[in-house]
Image (cartoon, rainbow, N blue to C red; front, side, top):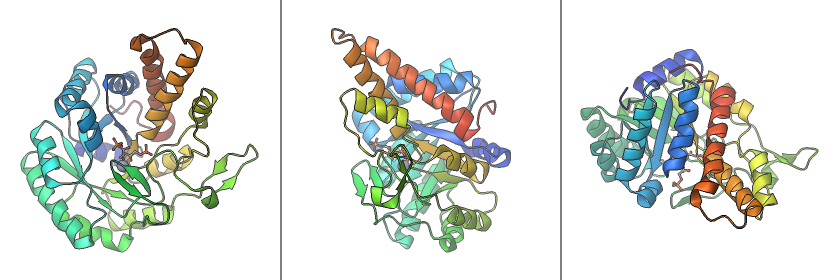
Length: 322
Ligand code: G3H
Ligand code: 13P
Ligand code: ZN
């Protein structure tokens, strides 16, 4: 099947009590790792491209890599989504350039400015058969060149969501309930420590999520910043020359709970980076004489595939839903 929009994917996910994984893609190995896992598990999947990914790899290369994945995996629905579009022009360029979904992230603007810019993107996108994700509330962490310090994030205000969705016409809404971007999602002072000295983060704000769901029945909710920062990869990075103390993510069981509710899209990028980096560091340490990129990118690609397969089955619940 050709690239699809997320409309039908989300309707099925909402009713089926699961979420679709949205994984960031930056190169061929990442596209292959993600889609091989989704293909084998018969899972729908969203491949998302950030402004930084476009700057790194070039729009055309990324679109063509994704189109190749669609040809190689004809049995699963694949959507191509712009992650954190920050201007109308960027969204328009992706809509004109073959994306089936875009995010306009005007969450750092005032409520009315967010609505105005989101509405403008929605009008253009819908005229071209493309769906739009918007955001209300701000996450902590780093995305592209925007960095929000811990303590400066703000949870979504449920009393604003109905007005926002009806005035913008957006197709899905990213909300802030305590997730954040990157591999350091919580400061040590926000956490407790378990017996092994590993940080245990505060729980997600399910009260805010449930209040949003009550006010937007049937409407797809999106969670950004949903990497779990698996400690096996953090250990691997640190064991083989890296230095990532106190890297910590969102516990998988909480994401699974969210996926059973109205959360239809769960964004994961940092876990891909960790899986690749840990495995490449290990490979270099164990094979100091090797210099063929295919040798060290092969286990890195396999690690992405294994990690995505784990997410599909144990976190998203989207296996067999293609
Ligand atoms: O939300 C941010 C994503 O992890 C994309 O990151 O802007 O560095 O490509 P990036
Ligand atoms: P992570 O940094 O938790 O992987 O979040 C990725 C994301 O939200 C992309 O938009
Ligand atoms: Zn994000």
